Length: 367
Image (cartoon, rainbow, N blue to C red):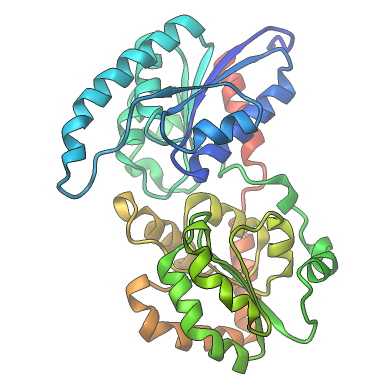
């Protein structure tokens, strides 16, 4: 039996993108709920977004001087060995001082050094792999990790089978019942009830190829009686916000009420980051994935293939948008049967209890 009143010390690392930060914070929140006396410490990369987002979530964080290797020839790679040595040394000092009972890694540059040093000090470790194709860091950490929580089946190719637990990725709890929010969502976005609504998502920074696609297809959407909620991202606000003056087009830098955006949508166009894919499975709407081809190990394409191969979404490679988009989208918008089938199939892939299931595994390590 685990002692809920004990002051457990829990160290977490996840960062670089929201897809790594959000799961780490969600896991910490669930642990805090179960163990109110627990102490938490996050470890991130000094110049990355976790240094801002984690304190906003109410947790302390320490930064390591670490970054990834550039895939192209770059002078920045010359600094990598020095950054790695520095971050391993400082991660070791953090472990010695904090004395954690468990270490949790959800991906990002800092999780490698931190969990490596936790392993060295015999601290139980859990890694959470969000993608269908793991990165190099988690493949290396898996050899000594105690438990590996994954979001896709079939990862025995990369990880020891006896360590794997299929849990899914933590998602926002306000997405679990969006069906009841449809009327509220249509009022919130001031949508017309006689038109289909397309939701376009490119991530917090935005996706250039998706934005340029939507710009090119605005007349096509209008001629098909489609209204558009278009999240263009921070990097592209100045270029695309002018299209908010076009009838039935709304351009947003961010969408603060993602639950209502999902509830309002009839069809969604999205990148295929791990968190987005997990959310879209729970939302259960017809999805067109346009994976980013610029991420490590091309993992977005592999995430999207894991869904589209089960006839649960449409996958269009970024390089094929000009040739394929109108053909595939017209087929989708013209077939209620296809929309219904995609919705049904993607919802069957949802793992709604991911956060609780991951924390159950952490509890076992605390025992």
